[in-house]
Image (cartoon, rainbow, N blue to C red; front, side, top):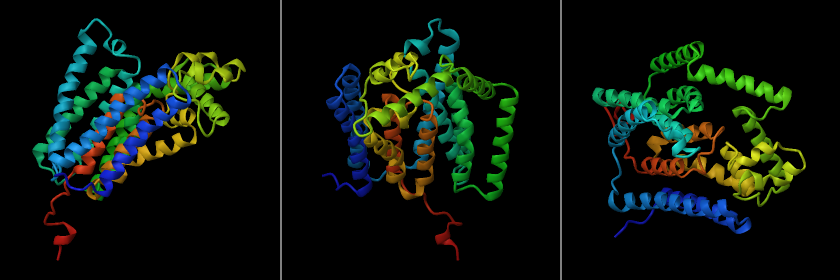
Length: 360
């Protein structure tokens, strides 16, 4: 039979179940077409998350070797990267529009996250040279997919997260850590100076923010996001306990639009491009608690030896979720839960000759 669930497995199930129940409660309080759609989708997401954890607990009780996860990660990036690049350059139909307005950006975020996970694992000096080379190839494949997605913000998030990865990787020596930080800083300066994705996006963002502050311009990418966030905070003040529900923004912010406090342009969208504010305005203060629980999930359930890697995952979703919504998109939420299952199930690394317990 199945062994009894441990504390970390039980905690995983509780948080994933709360994720689904929050959408169900939101539908009960604020019924509507979008709310019903999200209940169905989030039920599938929760079943995938809980089912994968219970499957591993039942059939792979010994857990995973991290090198097996690393090779699976590399394989997936080396497959998806070239395919995405081929679709970007050689297919006439714009596949990024065809698959839906949200998914290309989320695809880019996940691709950059895969690159970061490959980089984190490659920095571990315990791994063999062959595995390290494979992980560096995985980084190339992931960045190809990120480029093909057209998600410029993901590259900016990557620049923010790389120093965090270097700092959190416990296997690095102080000298190697300092060297990598120097390489990252020089690389970021080079990308900005050459006006590549990162530099172009920063310049564009600064112009858009200035236009919003000076003229109230909300038609730009940054201007629209700022208007979303302002509307979310105003809505939260109106309904702090129960929220406005999972509705289209034109319905959720209808009163604010009628009062002229928010631009009518926000009415055409279904989320506010910020995970924290999305859960806060739609579910009230309980949504704030849910957001904190979701971010803490990998850290709370990860095996102790992999807690730094869990922090990288949580921080990545915090950064990417600052200008987008990952926790209302099925693809990115399922991926987050699956990575949490891996972190929960990794075996402890084998002690080496220089491990503290083997030192005289």
